[in-house]
Amino acid sequence: MPGPAVHALADQRIWLAPHMRVCRLDALAVLLDLSRGRYLGLGAEQSRHLSDWVQDWPSDEQASPSEPPCDVPPAFVTRLLDRGMLTTEAPSQTYRVRLPAACRSLDTRDLSMELQVGPSRVARFVRATASATLWLRCRSLQAIATHLERVRGSRSRTRAEGASPSLNGQTAMAVSVATFDMLRPLAFTSRDRCLFDSLALVNLLHLDGLDARWVIGVKDRPFAAHAWVQQDDLVLNDLHEHVRRFTPILIV
Image (tube, rainbow, N blue to C red; front, side, top):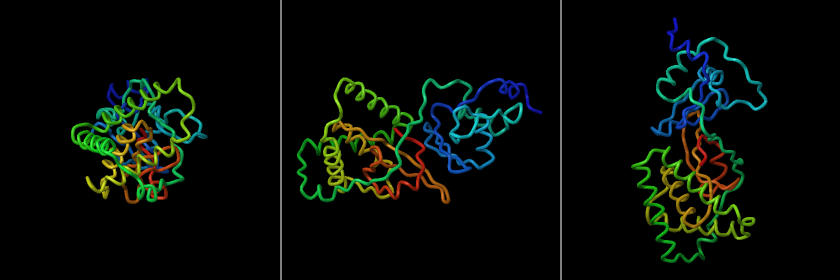
C-alpha cells in the first residue's frame, strides 16, 4: 500500500527538474541528466506514466490533456522524484527551443583553398578550443549550457536596438567555419569527438560575434548520441542527412 508521502503527491503537480531534458522517439523516450552527463532510456509504459503525470512532458500537439489514470503516481515516477530528476516545484522558465529541421549542410571546401588565416584568427581558434577542453573537463553539461545561453542572451540584448542582420552574415559565418575547418587538423581530430568539436566551433563563432545553436541529439536501435552546430536549417559541421537521424534533446 502506498505510504502517506506517495498519497500526498496525488494533490501536487510534477515537472521535470531544471537539469533534465527529454525527447520522444515514437512511443519511447530518452532523458538527459545535464548535471551528471547521463542518458536514461524509457520504455513505452514508463513514457506513458510520465506523460500522464509530468506537466511539461512533451506530447502530441493534437492530443488533448488527460487526467492521471490513478490516484497516486506509479513507483517509477516516485523513484525519479526521489532521485531529483523530477520535482514538485514549478519551473521558473521553459527550456524548450524550436529548431528548424536540418535541410542544408555548409560546404567550405572552396573557401578554405583561398582563405588567409591571420594571427588574430589563430589566437581565437586556440582560445575557443582551450575553453572547450577546460569546460568539458571541469564543468557539467548544465553549467556549459547555462553559460552559452547567457552569452547568447547578452548578445541578443546588445543587438536589440540594431537593424536587420547584415547581408554579409552568411559570408562571415562561412569564413569562421572555414577557419575552424582549416586549423582543426593541426590541433585535434573530430573523429568520435563530436561533443568537443561542436563546443569548440560554437566558442569560435561567439568570439567572431556570430550565433549558432549547439545541439545534442539521440536515436535508438541502436542507441547513440551526437552533437553538432546548426544555424536555422543549416548544419555547420556535419552533413544534414546524418544529423536528421537524431532527435534533438538539447538545443542551446
